Length: 490
Image 1 (cartoon, rainbow, N blue to C red):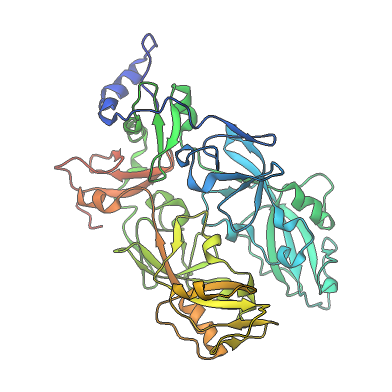
Image 2: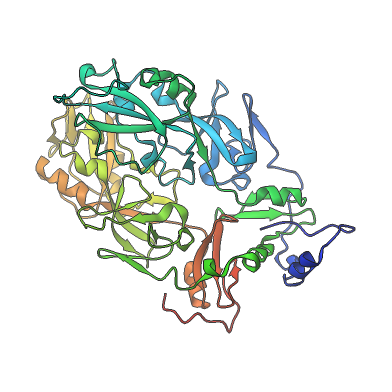
């Protein structure tokens, strides 16, 4: 992992000498280090902010990963700045790479939000994992009573329009892949992670949600870098680098890892392109259940329905993968929740760009926009289509420039759709959203250059970075040396 050179006078054991002898001179990657310590620890209220987190307005972007950018409001409350939900950061546990958050938008008793949120899907594309130290808090609403009574552990939720048919249930350890089909009552289900406490039940759902839940994040080797005298920063590609006191980047020292890695983990055949229906799966994507996670970027795991009944999902999120274009780094995807709602009412609270803010995906500017206007104080333009939600109108789909024509005095949401889409009647809506929209990805590393040099693309969780697997079994930061070639077709 990235560390700084051993200082003079330090004891070097034979195994360490052997490893260091095999490494290139780290000064070949020399880059001047800014000695003004722009990434020094900052604070927001009583919360200390340091790598991999960084405080907007205080730290430059190189002080942490994009998804870890923190905002500090006037009340000195810290929150993740690039999230569709307002996730307040309550505590950061740097020693074990975890932090506790709570969803501030669920603290005001707005049950409509509470009953339509699913944390594992909302965070599925982010570089965070929901800890199994959390418990599952289920919201079950619209339940149809059956002959047998509902479980006594289900507590009525009193703030919904269907209070007699809506419940909260505090279950066991959090499992993002839990099978909910066996629940009685034929209910619509949402689930949230919470940090439970002794004696808590579903009736305590407000207090449980205020306590928040625990998230984990990858350990990229920063602690080892700091112990060796270095400083952790991020390059322009959102990759980790260890800056040392002599002004060099010690990234080349990651060659220690492949020397110690098990041969099975470096098998060139384990990441051969796979298929899911008509999709070809290769880096930065990887096929869950059939390929190791190092075959692609962590949040680009594709879950394939073996029956073919539903499109492949991306990392247990709401996104359904319809097509992948590796040549221009784009993917055609649909949003499952929008596709399920033929009435289009769900789109009134929809913001695709915000929901992707923590990921390495962005809505392509090539899409057209389907504009949803609500509670407007002006006369709708010709061609607008009324929908079943009160006070809501759709404008025909068009290029992105249409957004600039929205008059003041109107709430609106924008649904991206494929270029050339048409919506002449409300009945066209379901087809448009199911056809999907274009997303573009930007991931660290140049996979094409790695392939051209004879290597294969990998993600090294040990340093949280792209690596190129070369024929000699080594993971190199970018490309393989000339003269090497892996014969397998990529």
